[in-house]
Image: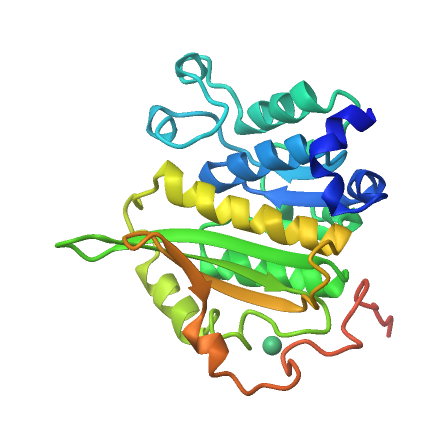
Amino acid sequence: MSNERFSRQSFLGPDSDQKIGRCTIGVPGLGGGGSHVIQQLAHVGFQNYVIYDGDVVEESNLNRLVGAKSIDVPAQTPKLHLAKMMILGLQPQARIKGFAGTWQDNPEPLRECQIVIGCVDSYQGRHELEVACRRYMMHYIDIGMDVHGQDPPVIGGQVILSSPGNLCMRCMGFLTDQRIAEETARYGKAGTRPQVVWPNGVLASTAVGLVIDIVTGWTRRALDHAYLVYDGNAGTLKESVTLRHLEVGACPHFLAGDVGDPVLIEL
Ligand SMILES: [Zn+2]
């Protein structure tokens, strides 16, 4: 790519454009959060993508789906197509492996990634992605937002980095059996969750910032885990209080040997 394109981000390091160009990044879920993530990755210069989404654009998506236009509703444009157009419009040479479905339908291509940004709805879905990322030694970055309560409604969200060999989402107090069980019990009764564009923008931008730090190391800090909590009412993003009080040395949930393809033993 031309040096001119990178001239305003040269502080990332002399070989940062090559590092960014070599990295393969996975984005399962190309809705509200994922669409922001894709847009920014493409601007920054990422060239290798593994992306998943089986949905088409609906009227109710237009309040937050970056890149979508009104015409995409009657045209029933796949979100996957929007993401590809976003990437190729900025990076015509990009290599995109795109799948119109969930990553679980087609998990092998995801294993090529070094970093996966999960923009999925459920705790169970997050758990499954983290397990896959640990097994194939990929960094996992989770983003999500929620609106709860009334008078006033409260917008919350999180950005979490779970890296192989370091603290996981259970260690950091985000994933718990109770949360997964409560979600399973609510299944089918949750209704449509509120989702808006600006918290997704904050969370996606923060996730992409972590990606750039992992790939280029430009901040020169040791980045082995992160749990940032977004308060959409106050407009702040702070390290999780739970994380601050943690005294976990090493992750007991993922063992060092649990990597690669599970070995099938024939009897
Ligand atoms: Zn753990």
